[in-house]
Image 1 (tube, rainbow, N blue to C red):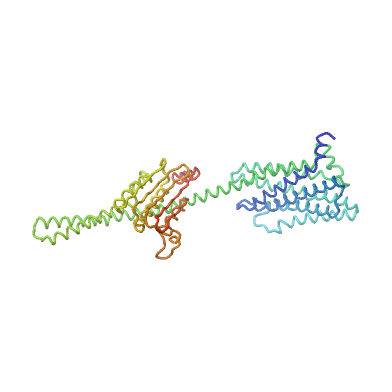
Image 2 (cartoon, rainbow, N blue to C red):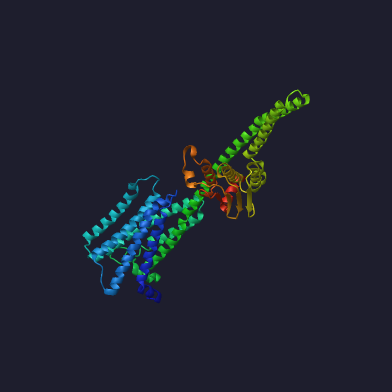
Length: 498
């Protein structure tokens, strides 16, 4: 025996430990992956494959323990202990068979279609063992060894072939889903499974059974210079590595679904904002064309009446003054109407962006409300998709309207902060404040529809809104909109159509 072979034979317990650890780790990784929500049928078949890993790893650790007891105290396992070990081995191969049948069965197959063939193969092995026991009547220890060899021939090798076939069908599914890298990982995992199942299970303990009387673990050690358990363990490690790599396909799938959900949300946002803005434009146009023209005509008519009465000098001052007042009312109403039309859809938002639109609106708001209001722009401004800028503008509009109606504030500050990772919008006042939690929970006529509307708009664009307020200490409404490269890419495709 060469030095390398002698080294591994002396350290066969360590070989068994890592052999079992590789399979147990495989079972653990697959068990965690089985909880993923996926459209791949692969996830439905992972549970039996995970059980195969767990059971086979435990089987190898049991063999390791048996080796330890033999080497340390000379104690040999009892027949019952060997039967229990062998039962774990057969059960592990049954799980591998179940994995293959699950993945290869047509969608919607019942459990009978999957597990009855597995049960049939186990019963075939039991029948073969029973025949050997009745015909040859070997000693219990030899019978267990022959049953072990039969399990590997009739269960292990077919299970590995079936599992390899199932993995190859899944790698084609990955390729069809435009995930070729994971398909390549499955090919490597399939290769390792084939080597483990065909080569590793062909070389078994030496028994009178054919071909174990010729192809056995002693011959494998003589040919290749390493124990067959080390070969099986190495294939298990390779299978573990590439199976774990292939499981990342679920992460890619989740990312794609998230992007699809984001795209659907953005499309919904586009439709909602377009519908709202189209309705605002329609109302603004009708106000301008109908109400605005009527008010203009009334103002001009009253101006003409006033001039006529003044020129002819026939009307008393008591009649001229009411006409002048009515004319002033109509002129003021016309000015307010023009302001409402501008608020409905400010053209500056489309032309110059959010900071310019907020600057115009804050100045107008300060003049109309006689309320000191300041706009602070931090960072380097950048453009967002039109839908996002519109929503942020409307949120600011609603917040300032609420302040004017309810806050009794003497100072308002609007902060628009641009950072590479996010855009932050803050509207803060020093007014009377309110109980934010109660305001959001109110229903009926007293419901906080303005706050709820702002929160819904913020959620629609994928942002977060916080409300910090309590009675007597003002209020601060903060909106944070992530602007990560992925989100910007999706937004750009939404806006450009590419």
